[in-house]
Image (tube, rainbow, N blue to C red; front, side):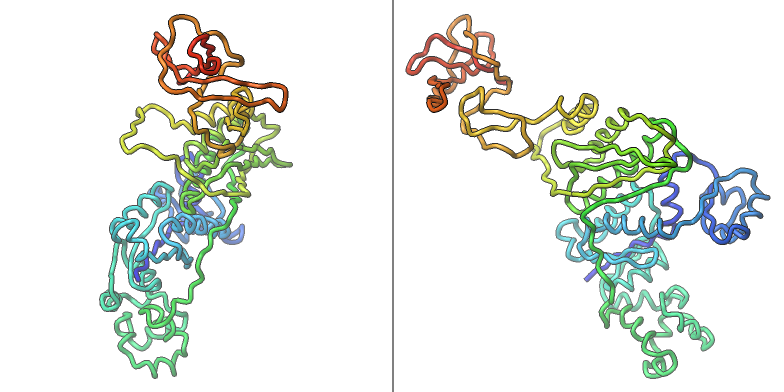
Length: 465
């Protein structure tokens, strides 16, 4: 087996930075109000001379203006769970460890390629989402966890190589139980020294907990980790850094949330057809429901659909937070595309254009046509949802006229037909015609009919695209 570890040393700070569109020094603080201390800071704050562990009052004396955000441990857990959902794209065995994820990737190599390719994809996904990280791979999850703490990009494939890689690791980076701190007083400095010590002596001195940790590290004992299971719904909330009175100012958090939703849906191979944005005010919230014709998961499609609905929303009060809820995440079936199908670089995907039109013009303005079991053209189509109706054996025109009209000019060229239609006798609206696919002198393809067993008196009933 091969386990990958994604270490997230700046998870709290990255979670805050990715929801802000402004720049400048920023620090996360924790502790009582009178003794608040900096627990994380961005590059601008570090360049200004601030540091982790510094009192907030001392930092304010050193730097006149900088953003201060309270550290929220629940937010850290939420971001870690979100990234576990993203990692689920690469493996069904994902586990959470403090500030890290581990995932079993040996069974995924047939799909994604060898470890370097999986590593490249993981890094690209995490970077695009705005999370700094370290990656390592090892035959055991705890081994990968330790190696990721030592350095970025380390990878060993066998237990023997893992043992050699762990040999020089300092005990302080060994992810060992608290009782192992006493080993320093015995002159033990590295994991290699510890692993060479007699087990019976270690058991008598430190108990079974330390030996169990070493066995899990080397794979001699089950890892004892609970597997992550992605939820079947989404409920995400972000607090804005300031009160927002204009819908246009919500574009940045909206783009970030829909991109996160797209990444999450892609990881679970699902889609979403309806979700709700709750724009929270000091009192109450404004709900904006986004519904699409079919399940989608493209970041651009989700963003355009949400932005179109938001632009039609009037805010009754400033917005303090945005909450995204999706109760149902149906399976997603991507559209089939030709291998050599090309789309102009400046053209939008059809789904994105469709949802933008629906958002601008209303749900009833853009709809999908489905077929019925009635063969009469006037009754054979209706407004329906995706995949409703039955497949027509014969081709049908995309533009069906409200009523047939005479086809003027020279006799058309018959391309296909006739298709005899003789029905409706049971409800007083009988139809008895021979339909043809024809081509006019102008090169237009039309759907026309004649009386049975005749090729004259053409009546035009529709046009093919």
